[in-house]
Image 1: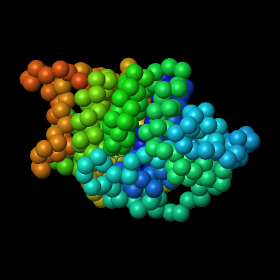
Image 2: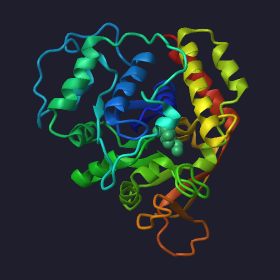
Image 3: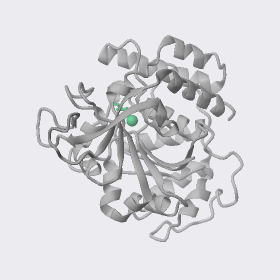
Image 4: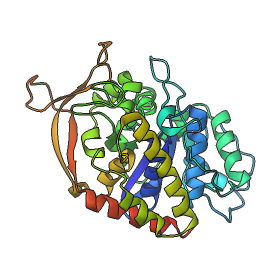
Length: 353
Ligand code: BDR
Ligand code: CA
């Protein structure tokens, strides 16, 4: 079992990453944080809560503590307080609204104005008030979001894996504010980067391009980094067969997931002329679930932060020409069939809620 903190910017594929991370047998989610990326921070936080509620991560029968004993959200906030309040299975904390140095960029053209758009209006399960109140309070009253993440990671009984499926802003700020957190992080797994062709620049991938300085900082942090780049995620295509296997589950959840994927498919088609959209973020989760599904190679990866033309490029030194210390395990190939089996198993498990 791998204990995981998930930092994300939902986003269609981030939402499915929450689903896979919370409904596979190999991951224990100890916390979720959001970052501005696919949409503004307010929207990605709202979408994370919608997703948690949809996948059964908000308790229907809350404890007395969940129901809102007044709690003092300050420096003294304890991780156990986050665990019991709001009826959420793990804390949800809103992170940075913007990148370290650059203006924020959103990806409305793919994820729509809400960040989780569908073409037809769907009925989402109602979010209990105690859960939204908890998120609101935690975000408005805690001293700093990195404090909550730090406490969560430090107080976990064993070292954790930090999984990031959005820009790396939160992780960089966490490492800057609490350098000793690195003692408690066994590895970092990210969806991001590309060995070659980019998706928001000729050679830059969105998550890295939004906050290249943060990525540069994280790659230099001396914690093992595993990068799941576009070359891998572009093999996880949502084909009509995949849509059929999800819709054949015939549940409320499968109906909602199909609508989300159909929207994602249409924007990908308009924007990238791709018939079938790649389900990026769950691939990074799959790496944690079963690394044997991947081929990877340790190499030197530098993030371009100076050039106007190619900032955000992850320069992968495959042949170690720079002779610099190798710092990133780059995933190069994934067992796609097994990936979809894991996804479908997780959807089946989440269906019970
Ligand atoms: C990444 O960018 C976002 O739009 C997706 O959620 C994914 O994390 C792919 O480049
Ligand atoms: Ca994402």
